[in-house]
Image 1 (cartoon, rainbow, N blue to C red):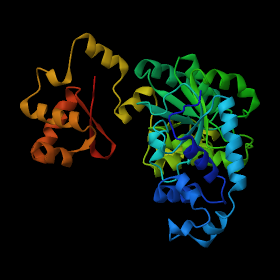
Image 2 (image 1 turned 90 degrees about the vertical axis):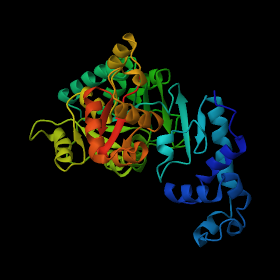
Image 3 (image 1 turned 60 degrees about the horizontal axis):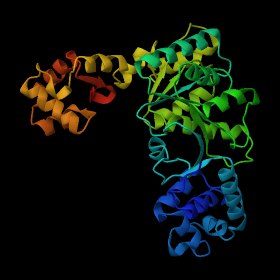
Image 4 (image 1 turned 135 degrees about the horizontal axis):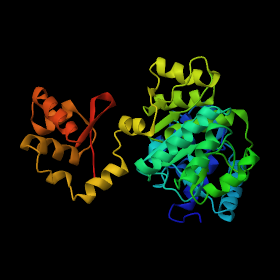
Length: 381
């Protein structure tokens, strides 16, 4: 059921704020962050310049009448309560933290489901709506392997035909939580053929959207939806794509958010591999051919490795073969993981010339893993 921990008036006012004017998500988010709360903004809707002296004439005019936005927000709150939907405003602790950091994050998300939106590992799988047998087999194998390598992972996609629905169904078949990001309100499911899968996802993941009920699945909404798919995950995996398509839009957004982007290559000349191959060629994505490749790229230690280490009673801080210098580096990464070598040099007092050799030794011992950008990740148990 919808939670009662957040200030209900602030939730109501934040929903209403999304209905005022025709401002971009970025502009509305900047306004909210500058003022501090939707309640404060609406309390000064007739004199907005008292709390925001830089308010534009357009914003002043839009704020004059809030009756319709408030009525719409109240109706939405009633609908959400009746249908067990949680409206997550951007200040809510349960709002996806990865997405919250994006400059165009939605002010409100409407969520039904069981999955933790701030789980440790979240990936998005995207691609063409005309997935070939080749693409579908890649997805099934990839998700099946993820069940072994990272069973706690959450798989996000857009519930569309092709790659999306194959990713969702493969996740459910393997007991992995999966979240569908919708381009419309939670009062309907589009496409209707995916309703049964969507219902299963409510118990094994969830459905999420920024759109209020009675919002149609208009074309522009799918583009807006893509930024949520990209923003709420650690990495975006492109499986198949033509030279132009929604999957490439999502990977472009993911790159702008500094997310990891990976793509499966395909046969030269194949229509629905062209987008993947071009993206890899232009350094817009890392080439992967398996779940193992993705785990290595992200610096994720596999669950199998973790279980093996635990069965042997190994603890990182008790490795008998670590030198004093290696232990010092390990301790620094334990305090603050994922550091660049220059920062590690400052923290440990070890010269970079010497530190490079130590990090290589730790990598060989399976204690750390180098990541993109010269960052070193401590493999925890």
